[in-house]
Length: 271
Ligand code: HEM
Image (cartoon, rainbow, N blue to C red; front, side, top):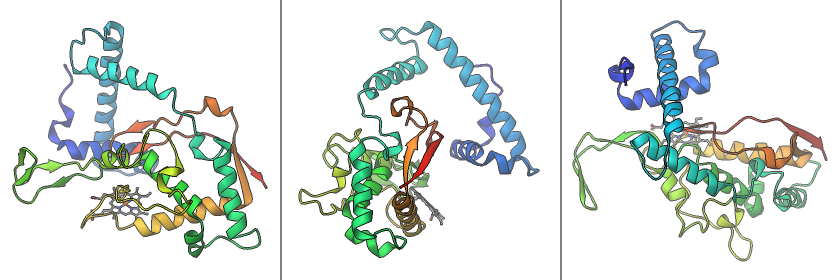
């Protein structure tokens, strides 16, 4: 294209990260002086360029005769979209299907009751809620490509040699959507983390925080907070979307370093 190669000065990975951080924290960064402000302008130029290219390609798209990579990508997007219509809409998981929410609330009522707040020690007695939290993290795959790493020596992997210094993105999504480990992986189903008898089923494929020496150091804190927030809210409230559940989309608004969930309004109805 005729764009002035603005990202050429930055390694691609840095550009990806900056783009994501800008999307997520622009409201803070906009107030700070510094060279990042140029990056934002350049990022806007890239976005405008991409939008224009997509528009042109969409106008001339013939899925049976793709002209280039963008055509192939657009065709695949259409295919996936068609496929996804059959996936039950779960409205960020807590309203629909109905029994999911009521089962979590029943478990909270049985194990915690209404007179005290939930605590972390309750989790071991709440396999269903624990499974729902795991399934949310598996399903949304918040950070699908982990963070970029580099190999410290030549690595032989299957039929390939990855030379020392190569940047690699570990695709956590391939484990989280593994169809042998999690049958029908595109469906939201807490059963992915439950044994037949209803006890919690641990899975080595559950790696939303990555794995190995550089695993997310915030894992313990994040998991504790997600559990406590969710259970404390559902102990006291039922969450209801303000539009009909079918109208809610759970497709991320941005996919890249992170799958950024869409915003929507909901009502918290006291129980
Ligand atoms: C649901 C919440 C979270 C998810 C899904 C998540 C996921 C991740 C992932 C996939 C990585 C990359 C690991 C790798 O390089 O292989 C990471 C790194 C990291 N996370 Fe998290 N994280 C979460 C919450 C947190 C929290 C709450 C903190 C801090 C309080 C935190 C701090 C960090 C830090 C400092 C790193 C870099 C570690 C390193 O490079 O050695 N994260 N996280």
